[in-house]
Image (cartoon, rainbow, N blue to C red; front, side, top):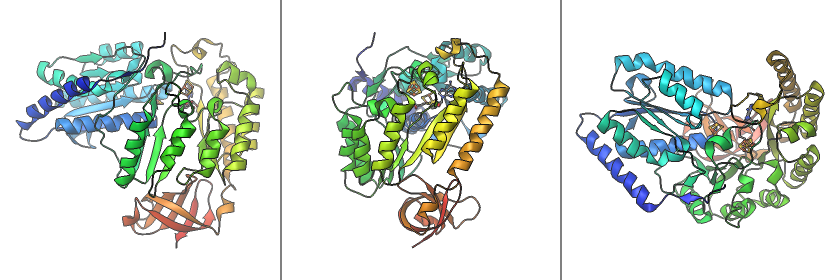
Length: 468
Ligand code: SAH
Ligand code: SF4
Ligand code: F3S
């Protein structure tokens, strides 16, 4: 049964505010502000949740540190999408055992997608007794009450309600960057791709109201944010329950005055409309980049994955995007070794990759996730064999992407400078409206602003240029 989206009420949020004030009051009697170490694993949604966690902690009086040894609170915001993501978290949490022995007052918290699975929570609770707080994705906004209960009772706190989803507006956000901002427009997923754990741990799809999103983006632009990314597991199905399409929302946001770049992720091919591509093509601020995960180039595998499109339908959208959007950059996710995939089917994926000519790919070896349909499917190909296919795929992609940026050489492009290069101090990095990385020389005071760069050469994964 699908429940109607529940918006967290003003009263509930006020209650949390009171807990937050109560925690701040406890800390005000201490000599020094406590420090928190917060790390988010996984996708941008999780990073965005991490920024809300930091926003709430800051209101409670926490400062922040990158050094676990100095932290009074260590919080891991976890990801469950593949087994190695979970292994990493168990490794990181395990390493805290000795630190906690040295500093018994250290509070250790684990939250996010991983703990929304019962078998994981049980393992964490039983095998890691030094973990003080475990809370799921649906109660993020109640962090102030969780911290308050822990501080006042000293008892372990475990909160993992099963819920189809709610939306909490007005939770404070402490953004990691002064010019890059994540804006979730929807939460959860209804698609149940057979390999994927996300719908199981994030609940059903629910969209924020357009007016809340428009206000947030307008405020960000006014505050000087230059790189704004709209987030959702499947942004193309935004607004279904509200009677507005993602294309309409994007068009409205693009009309906000200012100099900024507007991106979004992730698009599901089954819901990617021509209308959306037209909006991107005609946009002033919209990134000319489409991340359209295909997962496989075999219709049989796509069906077994429950992706609900065919290679033909996918190619239709890709071709339309190439035709309409000037020099569109295309990226995708690929899964190698889905249960029952044959080598011939894998070769169909290779064929598709060659045909599309992606700018870059995110490639994964299939990882069985407990509770998903694919985890129960026969999977006769060994991990070793899948590893060989995976290498083959990487090889094809590195050959395919080698020449794709040559077309920009000699041209001047607007670049949002977003960082300092690793090799030299005066080497800056930035991204074009196509989201392609550009390296050029300049002063680091330019980080966070737009500059014009003449492209002088093309690398495999980036371009090099000179500021004009
Ligand atoms: N909502 C996005 C994907 C989120 S997960 C979408 O629908 O495209 C990001 C990527 O992780 C997926 O696109 C998929 O390629 C990969 N992935 C998800 N579950 C996986 C699994 N069980 N094994 C391997 N890769 C997986
Ligand atoms: Fe997972 Fe599919 Fe939903 Fe993406 S669309 S989050 S892959 S179930
Ligand atoms: Fe991972 Fe959860 Fe994102 S499972 S990929 S952090 S939605």
